[in-house]
Image 1: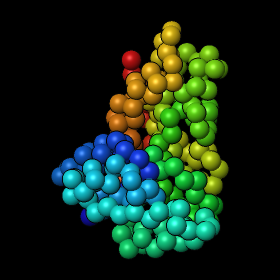
Image 2: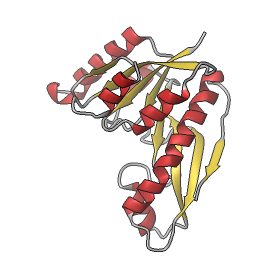
Image 3: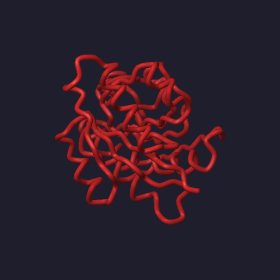
Amino acid sequence: MKKRVAILISGGGSNMVALARSMGADHPAKPVLVLSNNPDAAGLQKAADLGIPASTIDHRQFSTRTAFEDQLHTALLLAKPDIICLAGFMRILTPEFIGKWQGKILNIHPSILPLFPGLHTHQRALDAGMAVHGCSVHLVTPELDGGPILGQAVIPVNTGDNPADLAARLLPMEHRLYPKVLREFALNSKAKTSLLIQGK
C-alpha cells in the first residue's frame, strides 16, 4: 500500500510540484493533501491543477500559535498522512506539534546543514566566503533545522555570485533532491538515507 503524503506550503509551491510529479505509478507514496497557511499561495492552484486536494488554514486568523496548530493537526488527521513534507512552509512548528507527528515530518532547507540554519542562507553563505553552497533534506525535530540529515545537494559558489544567483542555481537541485529523499524515506523510514547530489 502506498504511503500517504501531505505537503505544507506557504508560497509558489515549486518543491511541492516537484514532489507531486515524482509520485508516479511506480512510486511508493502518493500525495493526498496540499495545505497552506497563506490563502494567496500560488501553489494552491498548482496543486488543484495536479488533482491534489488543496486547502488553507490562515495562521493570521488565530490569536495563538497553539490555536493555529490545533487546526493544522485536525486537518492532517483527516488526511491520514504517513509522511508530511514541508516545502517552503514558512511557519516554525512548536515542539508540541512536532511531537504529535514525530519521525514523519521532512523539510528542505537551503543550506548545507548544519551550516546556516534559519533565514537568509544565501547571503550568509556569501558573507562567510563559502566555496560551496547547497540544500539539505532533514527530519524535523524541535531544534530548528537540526534534525537528522537525509540528503544534501551541493553547488559551487562562483565569483560575483549574489544571493539571487545562488537561489536560482540551487532551486533545480532542490527539485532533484527532495523527490529522491522522499522516495527512499517512503520505502523505509527507518533507513539511514544519505544522498549527495552535486550540481554546477
